[in-house]
Image 1: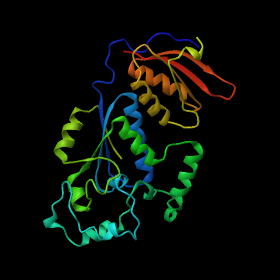
Image 2 (image 1 turned 90 degrees about the vertical axis):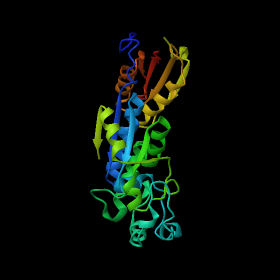
Image 3 (image 1 turned 135 degrees about the vertical axis):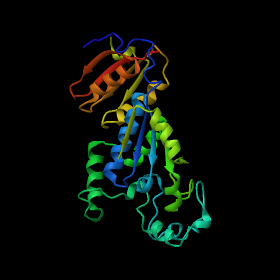
Image 4 (image 1 turned 180 degrees about the vertical axis):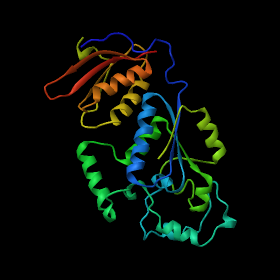
Length: 190
Length: 80
């Protein structure tokens, strides 16, 4: 089978102008996988992608810490980008402690069965040669997908940026999100 | 045209969407316009993925061949 001709007219900068944003709200494995697959795939196809993380969506980017880890409970709410330490309260330690940190600890939205569901899904994915969430997060970033975390979520859920994160991410607010969304061709929320 | 004419080879057998695309995009980034890349994979939608990638980014699909193990090899010429 031989084609020979160029599929798009030469000289068209197909990838130069297209932009997309993905807003990840959910901290569930299925939605996070989908969001990162779309982001990595679109970036590979030539669209300039930017991912925004709010609430539990930021759990994908956080370092996996065991519930027994001192860093999880005795964080001293030490601050970081976008934090206001003077308004921190003790209950933020509880939120931080009970949170499912890390891409490897995310539950499924359906068929979770107390953590057995994600193990089954991961086994199937490994057998099928599908990329795991952790690989997609790093792969997407290597391709040039930009990660941004919402500032009020960082502040309220006591995330220390960049100490708590496995990848580089910026901390911005809704105005920056607006500018990106208004300039983008593809905006989606998971 | 035989696969030996290619300037660069990429084997993405055993992984599925979107990993072949990610690898392909990374490899193409390092190639100069006019160079030929032979990419091999066995994902069921591999050929159409590569064709879509070429259509979106202005590369040319030169040749597609399938071997007896259902592995598809697509040769593409990198566009400018």
